[in-house]
Each structure stands twice: as structure tokens, then as C-alpha cells.
Length: 419
Image (cartoon, rainbow, N blue to C red; front, side):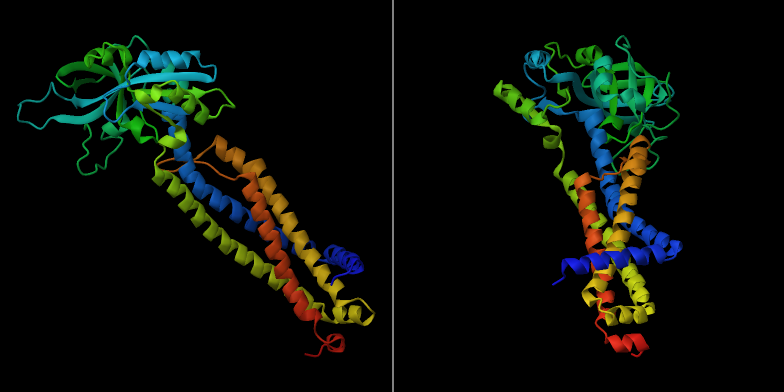
């Protein structure tokens, strides 16, 4: 058993050894610990953030906190005005946007097509009728306008096209997925068809985000789409709800269900509406991140083992002398444990400062531009401290083993340098 005296002597020897060691040695070992900690936290955080960035984008720019949609056997949300009236009276609701939706086609270059038998420049699309002001307040889609402008309430016969409908933004087409060819830009006339209704409209803008549901839609003012689909009862198809800070979406969902909304619509929180495969992908990437990070942990353990082992070998004679004058082997072993602990703590603290003081704020302000998401760094404090504890534990073990190997050798052999 290690006694309190051995701890005191071990701490003294450790401090003395660190002070007398080369500054470059201390810097190098600490730097290795910093890189190891960053590898443990950042690699996993970026992999998870790759998917989390996409999830957050869908929440912020499409679904919001709670979404109400039509039942599977219904074309729209029945008695929508009454549902919206409930939302207006609920003090927990900050904002909401109601959307009409339907499917149809959009065609370009129809005026220049010479023969009816010529191939039409046409594709199917999902139409969304919105209140431009309410939609902007909830989903902030205007930030994704890459050409032209976002809609205004009076923009009758004007539309905003999703980028996935245009070949110039999606040059590689999937089988069965057709895009509009040509240089379609703001001011271009296109022809839309919904059911038996056909109308010529003007492209006001093009929206390009990393949200498939947005990129595949055609946005127009709600009053016009309502008239095109003959929805004179004001029954909408989607309502996205943003809550005031501090309120749990599940409580709003349950409240709406208690008020009978569940009989006319599906009420889901963002988590309810998220596909299971997205959650599985987050878990999978977290596992991959942990695997890759573990390799760095092994490297750090080997590095500390080698450094302590070489240090103990070169100081073998000194260790023998210490034992000869009455310093216990346990105290010497504890001194190397303290050294390992010092390097691990210093590296981890610097790593924490880099992660939470530099990397996380910077990446949050400047997300990593992945092809299908704006990646963020996901680094929960609890998870980071768990990794810090793991790094310290592995480092201490890696420092103790070589010290134990040298200390247990015969004292006289150590002093005389014999094997």
C-alpha cells in the first residue's frame, strides 16, 4: 500500500524532475497530449456534426420545433382555421407558418418549341403556397436565395424555384429525376400546371440550400396557390411552429392533441418527424469517431510509455541511489505517476481551451461546407470531460508500467549499471 509519506516524496521527486527536464521535452510531451485530446474530441465531434448540421438545418429552415401535417387518408388539415386559432392563443408559441402544398409540373422554353412532338423542357415539382413574411420569420429561407429575390405578399404570378429543379444547379441527374435545362434565371417565364389548371408565371428567385425538401419546391404566395387548387375553405397542408425559448416541444404537441387536433392532423415534434435512419447515422458516425479517436489514445499511451521508460532507463543509477538511501520504490513509482498526470492534465486543459475557446465558436460561426450539410463541431461538455478522464487514466497507466519495471530491479545492480 502507498503511504501518505510516499505520496509526498513522490510528488517532490516529480516536481523536481519536471523542473530539471528540458523545456523542449516538457513542451513536446504536452503537445502530444494536446493533439491526443483534440483527436479524441474533435474527430468524433466533426463526424457527428456532419450529420447534426444537416439535422439542424432541417429543423431551422423547414420543420421548426413542432409540425402539423395532414393525416395519411386526408388531402389537407381539416378545420385548419380552428387549429391556427389555437396556436394564436397559446402563449408558448412564438411564430408559425401555414403552407398549402400540391404537386404539378413546371415547363420552360414552351414558346420556342416548334412542334408538339418535340421533347418538352418540363419536370414535376412540389408547390408550396406560403405567406412570404410568416415563412421568412420562421424558416429564414431568403438567406438561401442565390439568384433574384425572395417573395413579397403581393407577388402574384411570381415564383421562387428550388435549385434541384434546374440542371445548372444539379448537372448530374438521377434515373427518373428530370430537371429543367437551359439558363433559367429571374425574369424567365415558365408555365406551371396543377391538376387541370395551367398558368404562366415569372421566376422571381432561385433558392439553393442543403435541405432537399426546400430545393425541390416551387414557392408562391398562398392566396394564388389556394385559388389554383380550389381550396376555398382555407384548409392548409402544413403548419410549422416555432416555440418561445424554454418550452418543451413535447408539451405543445400533447396540448394540441388534448384539444382534439389529433383527430384532424398529425402533430409531431421535430424529433418525432425525424426519420429513424438519421438518428442511426448520428449513432454510426459517433461510433466511427470513437474508433478513430481510440487510435490516437493508443498512440499517446505508447508515447508516454516510451518517454517514461527512456527517462527511467537513463536515470536507473539515480533510482538505485534513491533506493539505497532509503527512498521506497513506491515513492519513486508515484513520482512517475505524478509526472504522467501532469502531462495529461496540461495537455487536456490546453485542449479544452482550444476546443471551447477557439474551434467550437469558430466552426459555429463558419460551418464546414460539406456537400450535403454545413458541418458543426458537436462537443458536449460531459462527453469531453469523460474523454479527458480517459486520457488521464491511460496516461497514468502508461507512465506507471515502465517505472515499475525499472524500480523493481535489484538496487545494487541499478547503482552499478548491471543488467
